[in-house]
Each structure stands twice: as structure tokens, then as C-alpha cells.
Image 1 (tube, helix red, strand yellow):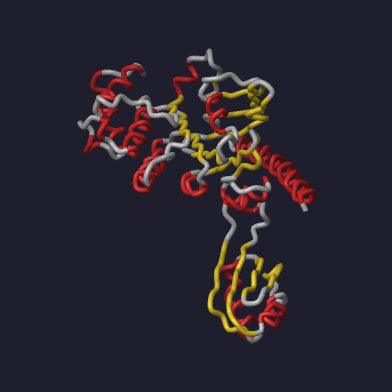
Image 2 (image 1 turned 90 degrees about the horizontal axis):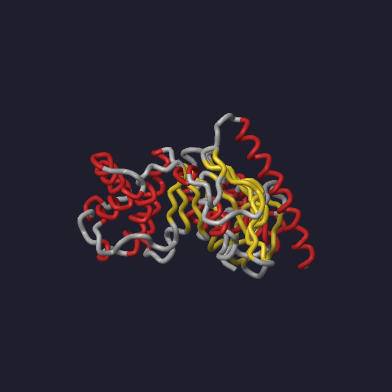
Length: 343
């Protein structure tokens, strides 16, 4: 069983890799110059390969997510994209300029929001923004106006005069994002910005990120929360063990699993007769039965569920519960890697 699962995973990853490269080529043919292009990037730490041949790109106004568990290579990847550490192989360009630790010009196009907070607690939100804006070369009325724009964008305008040491963790993280936006970067890098915040603050952060596409900013968003990737990202790159296992829209990734849904029906009566009847429905590909429950694998469950219910009841089963489950990114990750996203 383990061998077959490993072979299936390897085959899926190879296929996904080919689809990723084809997808990159298709988008390049559309004529839009991407803001970020990462090509076959490798990074080693001693004998350990943390990032192994990663490739993806981001266009203006697009949010691309790096989705993977802790230790998958997400932070190492963005550290190379931001020019904080060199790549051992491959190339990275930002706004058409080659990136590296010694390259200043491409870094001007980047806003980096790390996991660790980079704000001064004794200063107000506005004072923090003005301070960091001056480091970016902004000043005068332009800086004042831009600081107000950012405060409005991140939802902190009403608390702008308050010392940030009084802020909640979520408010501090929103200010962290605002600092990264001050100089109007073409690429904003967000490294797991919702880690350790409460649900309300997390939702406010996600709303702030959703607003960024209005400004036409390319966003690279790392997370190990699949619901964040599904909500925010135009395209998602699933990364594990330093490799991109698959990349695409949510719908494209779900299709890698075969795109099949599941229906679970529970009840009493003749479940074996119901199982036999359900196998005759064209949309049903598999039926597994136990004493009171039938587990079905189907094409397009919302469309098929009426026929499933009717067939089961006609066969003598009295239903007490019907549940539909559709594939999600967790299913995709399990399909590609053979393990759950949070393993």
C-alpha cells in the first residue's frame, strides 16, 4: 500500500510540474510582463536542500500564495525573492531586474512584511509610518498624504494617534503591512501575516490584503492555512519539501484530484440494496457500505444528490442524514504529497 501511494504521489508531482511550466508559458504568451519571475531557484544549507528548483511568477494586481506546512521552504523562498539571501542556483527578477543580496535597484520595488513585527511601540501609528517613509526617501506633504492613504487602507485611521504599544496583535500586524506599502512597491511580500492573531484581527488583516489588488500591487503571500489561500489568492503554489508540487487556480488544483465529490448518506433499512441501486447511477463512481452509512464518490455532487436520495429511498432505505463534501486544497495536498497539510 505504501509503495503504490508513493508511486502515485511521484506521478502526480511530475504531472503537476509539467502543468506548472505550461501554465507559466501560457501566461507569458498573453504579453503581460510579470512583476516577479522565479526560475529554478535552489538554496542549500550545508547538506540540506531547503528550496529545490522552485519556479513561479506574479503579475501586477495578482496575489499568488505559497501554501505549505512549516518547514516546507516558504520563508527561505521569499528571503531569496527579497534579496536577503542568495540563491545557489536559478534566477529571480523583480520588475525585469535581476535580484540578489548586492542588488539595490530591484529592492526598491519590494515591500517586505516579515513574520516578526518591525514597529516602534512608543510611537503612534502615524509616527511609525512617517519614520519608515523617510527611510524610503519620502518626505513633506507627499509623505503625509501617503501615510493617511495607508492608514485608511489598513483600517487604522481612527487609532492613528495612539501609541502602538496599546495595539492588539492584529492591529500591530496591520500596521506592519502598512509600513510595507508606504513607498508603493510593485511587489508586496507577506510572510504568514496572520500567525498568532485572534479571529477578528485575522479577518481584518485578510480584508486589508484583499484591498491591495485595487492598487495593482503584485502580492506574494505565504501561509499554511488553506482557507486563507482559497480566499485571497488568484493562483496558489503548493510547496512541500522545498519543491512546488503544483501551481494554478483553486479550480485547476482541485482537478488534479480527479475533481470527484463525496456524498455520505446515513439511515436505516436495506443499505445493501440501496448500495446496489446507487452503483447504477452514471454520476456515481464508487459506493462503500457499512451497516447504516453509504459513502459515495460522485461527479458533481450538487447535481447528483437528488438522484442519489431518490434511488436510495426507492431501494428501501430510510434516510436520516445526507452530507456532501467537495475537494479542497487539503485534498489536493494529500493527493500530491501523501500527507495532510498540517502533518
